Image (cartoon, rainbow, N blue to C red):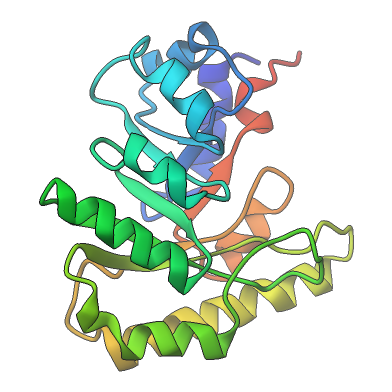
Length: 219
């Protein structure tokens, strides 16, 4: 199947209300353009340096999402063109993003990354840290909280993954109700990747991050 076929297949499965992010990390510009030519416009990169190396080689109307762990000293390189930062996993990082956004008088849409996996290698906020940030949002003049993101445990145990997705979905709904009841900008529940996106969508995800299932062309 072609990249175009892969994209259409996934979009058919997830429906119109779920955004597909094509995770283009490790793939060259000539491969990414095939997805673009198939109508895909939202792409996700994990590393700032890799994103910068590709951006100018590709069409300017691409919406770039930064989905990987972000270091504070790299924010200044992407703040003027990235559409959404998924991986805000600490108060310190949020403060740094706010500071860089203020320098160019922009508002940076961000997702708060929640730690839902049973793995030490993954990042994210716990509930206490999440609510502390939300209770003090008025100090961030150049941040727009657009939703939450999480990564499930890398396991074949579907019930465990489902439990983690349901936890994040319920947390998203609680935060929406308490802090953003009338704000349409808070709308993204980003969870689900190539291995588990169908389960994520079933649990309420409206934004999935898929790489290998799009870019791996198999017969």
